[in-house]
Figure 1 (cartoon, rainbow, N blue to C red):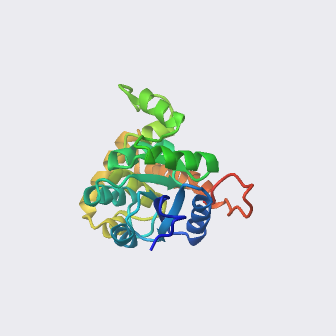
Figure 2 (figure 1 turned 60 degrees about the vertical axis):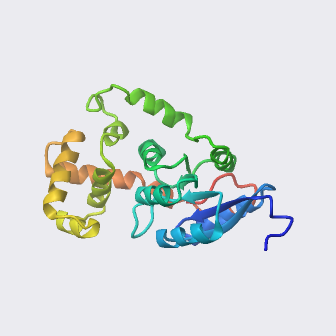
Length: 242
């Protein structure tokens, strides 16, 4: 039974596959006078059960989950719990994934490298019924309107042309998987994966399979900064661990 001290607090459920991250985010949220953690889970399956049992007011989502596709998790939550707002708090680059998360049903996106004040601001903005995205993401969305993404040398702009499935295939290619392995991983046919590869090459303005391999490998490596950060050990630290 909730105590008088917690009865009026907004309940937040955290999904992240890394225990250190879950504990860090939970500690940050529980320090706030109006917020509390009602649960923390590591998998999509656990999330769906926890939403049903803990009745959160908000769920935070990490996109990079083992054995699950983060955007699909958001879509599933939107279908099954349409009144539950979701906020992505992720190590994934907002310039690539924020718009995709919005299309999937999320109400906001904040990166773990951002300051704790921004994380808390995002939580309160979404709880207030509004969308939360950084000014950089909003500006990028405006620049994309009516623009030919194969002009210029913007790697982020080119990747923005990819569908969610194509982006998933690009990530697996960058991880060193061949078409057959990717097909097994995603439950698709090899022919379908090969078609995705051709579409990716076209959208990224690449001319050969070797260029696609090099591009995907380098792109995945460019995301690796997120794994270098460490857990803050003192309240004075200003960023989330990633």
